[in-house]
Length: 160
Image (tube, rainbow, N blue to C red):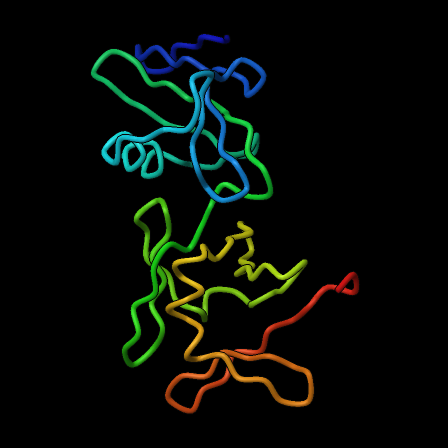
């Protein structure tokens, strides 16, 4: 654990090797007792996810201090958890942030769909995939998401 004091506010930084929680490949939080069950705690952790040059961390700030807990995760720390279909397709992340498909490109690897942005690799949850499935089109072995006559091609890895 490292402590620093800019502007009289104590900053506590906990490296991921010392974190007491982790995120699995499906975006589920776990600690030594098993998976997190309480929806409010899960929502709190998800909305506290931030990223800096050292990676993803859970951020908490109080009047006296700021805490950054870098945590281990499988695959990615960001997930698209819901789809809002309208004029465009709106994407809701586990962090409660909203995005659109225009903010990145779609990528398929090992039967998993991601949105790749300049800063993040964001995985579609199974719930989001079910909602998105009605917009998926296949033509000549290539997939795309089509909404209101606009197609978003899905790139795939050479491994598939």
